[in-house]
Length: 308
Image: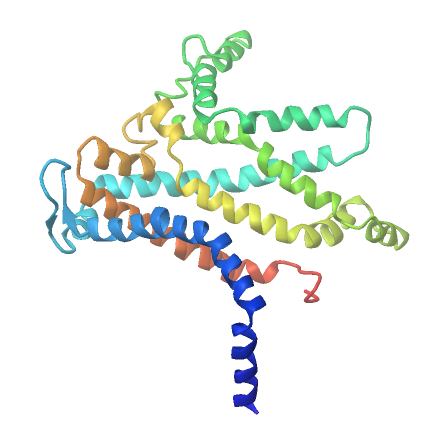
């Protein structure tokens, strides 16, 4: 029976129509597969090999085995950049998601002119990152910045936002909240997909706004929350622009993000092999963290089709 089925499949595949469909399939998917192999798989394999070498771009790479990884764990700046990135991720990601969800709830109302407000909240997300960084560098400027001008108006002393090791990271975390528009839009799309009948049924059962939010909105929005949280974590671990443009890793390496440290090792010190090993450690951290999030938070996600 199995042999007959297999023979039938082979015959079907060998039919002119099946061959034509297969040919078109290969033609349409070929460029994407080729691009993936050339631009993703190829550089990854080259980077993996490079991480086992010492290369300064001037001389041919010299194979050094695992020495780059051994040096890394004795490097104090490696640990400092990990600490800075972990601090930024643990604080900024929850604040960012809460802010984006709160704004989406505010924008999920049917009032006159709501589309204008939605556009205004989304606009900062499409402004180039460098322009945003320059804007916030002015806002946090200790001499003529907007924040210290407000403090002077209130009779309070100025704060060295970007020069004080205690204030530099909170300032960059505050800046990160400026771009909640993208996540807000995803939350808003999810909120508008929640069936109104569920709210009406809960209201008939005597549920107030808070109970409807906890027992209807949150469960049905859990896939969207999970997606935004995961994307936020991965994005925060790769933060680079704020630390590079606004503080350049200072003061005293208090904003030395991991990606910035990797960049310096590659394009300032020309230690390409060491930078490649840093990149692979970051990749491993992202993979482990993603698996952890799927393993422990994925269970809390409600999917309508599986009854959870």
